[in-house]
Amino acid sequence: MHYRNIIANFAQIYIFELKAGDTAANALKQIDDKSYAIPYQSDGRKVVKVGVSMNADTRTVDEWKVSNGNG
Image (cartoon, rainbow, N blue to C red):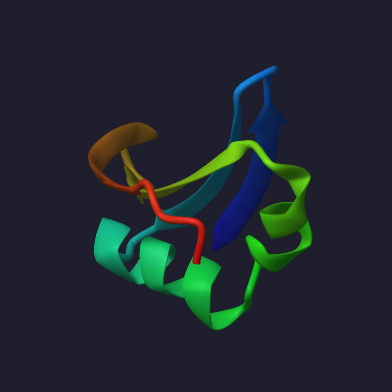
Protein backbone atom coordinates (compact mmCIF):
# COMPACT_ATOMS: atom_id res chain seq x y z
CA MET A 1 0.00 0.00 0.00
CA HIS A 2 1.29 3.46 -0.81
CA TYR A 3 0.10 7.05 -0.84
CA ARG A 4 1.46 10.15 -2.55
CA ASN A 5 0.87 13.71 -1.42
CA ILE A 6 2.07 17.06 -2.76
CA ILE A 7 2.34 20.08 -0.44
CA ALA A 8 3.50 23.48 -1.67
CA ASN A 9 4.27 26.83 -0.09
CA PHE A 10 5.81 30.02 -1.45
CA ALA A 11 9.38 28.63 -1.47
CA GLN A 12 9.19 24.82 -1.69
CA ILE A 13 7.21 21.96 -3.14
CA TYR A 14 7.18 18.81 -1.02
CA ILE A 15 6.50 15.44 -2.62
CA PHE A 16 5.70 12.74 -0.07
CA GLU A 17 5.54 9.04 -0.87
CA LEU A 18 4.28 6.93 2.05
CA LYS A 19 4.69 3.17 2.04
CA ALA A 20 3.30 0.64 4.51
CA GLY A 21 5.46 -2.42 4.98
CA ASP A 22 8.29 -1.09 2.81
CA THR A 23 11.33 1.11 3.34
CA ALA A 24 11.67 4.88 3.18
CA ALA A 25 14.45 4.37 0.63
CA ASN A 26 12.04 2.50 -1.65
CA ALA A 27 9.44 5.24 -1.23
CA LEU A 28 12.04 7.83 -2.23
CA LYS A 29 13.13 5.64 -5.15
CA GLN A 30 9.54 5.49 -6.39
CA ILE A 31 9.36 9.29 -6.50
CA ASP A 32 12.35 9.22 -8.86
CA ASP A 33 11.35 6.10 -10.82
CA LYS A 34 7.84 7.41 -11.51
CA SER A 35 9.13 10.97 -12.21
CA TYR A 36 6.70 12.56 -9.75
CA ALA A 37 8.93 15.67 -9.47
CA ILE A 38 9.16 16.43 -13.20
CA PRO A 39 5.95 18.52 -13.41
CA TYR A 40 7.32 20.83 -10.70
CA GLN A 41 10.90 21.34 -11.97
CA SER A 42 10.06 24.37 -14.09
CA ASP A 43 8.16 26.03 -11.24
CA GLY A 44 11.23 27.73 -9.79
CA ARG A 45 10.61 26.58 -6.22
CA LYS A 46 12.85 24.07 -4.46
CA VAL A 47 11.52 20.51 -4.78
CA VAL A 48 11.88 18.40 -1.63
CA LYS A 49 11.22 14.66 -1.95
CA VAL A 50 10.29 12.73 1.20
CA GLY A 51 10.07 8.95 1.39
CA VAL A 52 8.21 7.64 4.42
CA SER A 53 7.94 4.10 5.77
CA MET A 54 4.78 3.43 7.79
CA ASN A 55 4.17 0.56 10.19
CA ALA A 56 0.87 -0.97 9.05
CA ASP A 57 0.14 -2.49 12.45
CA THR A 58 0.76 0.54 14.66
CA ARG A 59 -0.06 3.12 11.95
CA THR A 60 3.03 5.13 12.88
CA VAL A 61 6.08 6.35 10.98
CA ASP A 62 9.01 3.91 11.12
CA GLU A 63 11.50 6.03 9.17
CA TRP A 64 11.82 8.79 6.59
CA LYS A 65 14.41 9.94 4.10
CA VAL A 66 14.66 13.34 2.41
CA SER A 67 16.19 14.35 -0.91
CA ASN A 68 16.54 18.07 -1.58
CA GLY A 69 17.29 17.79 -5.27
CA ASN A 70 15.35 19.01 -8.26
CA GLY A 71 15.84 15.71 -10.06
